Length: 64
Image (cartoon, rainbow, N blue to C red; front, side):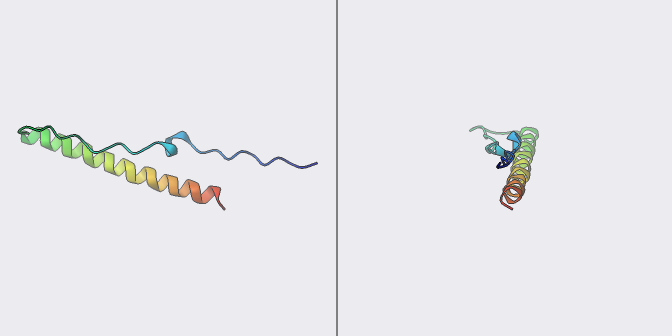
């Protein structure tokens, strides 16, 4: 009798796509708004980097 291999689970958050860059309005942007947009863009970039790292770790674990 053959034993069936367990199905490999990948967390749905790892399969998510990275958020895009922040849309900058086509008008004069006051400093406080520019700072907020820049901070949001950096947050998205950091989230994407961590997501891609998680994807790499998951792929490595599943292909061992």
